[in-house]
Image 1 (cartoon, rainbow, N blue to C red):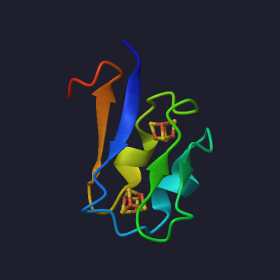
Image 2 (spheres, rainbow, N blue to C red):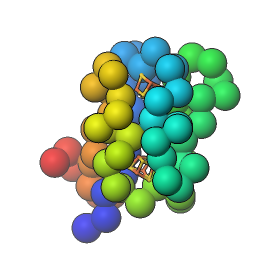
Image 3 (cartoon, rainbow, N blue to C red):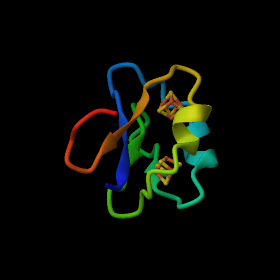
Length: 67
Ligand code: SF4
Ligand code: SF4
């Protein structure tokens, strides 16, 4: 099943590293408070999660079950 990046908004410091790392342009930090994933664009590659300095990105199954 396809995966999706899920950001813990309470831990995110809105540094933008994930936005820069995402090959799909699926992450926005325009809120200035936390990053937001465009669920339609995300392909679940995990690059953002590996880049995040606070470890607040998890990959979940599209069904919503953590892996
Ligand atoms: S890399 Fe992590 S802390 Fe930085 S904006 Fe993305 S989710 Fe937030
Ligand atoms: S999992 Fe991949 S496609 Fe999805 S937001 Fe992260 S870097 Fe972008």
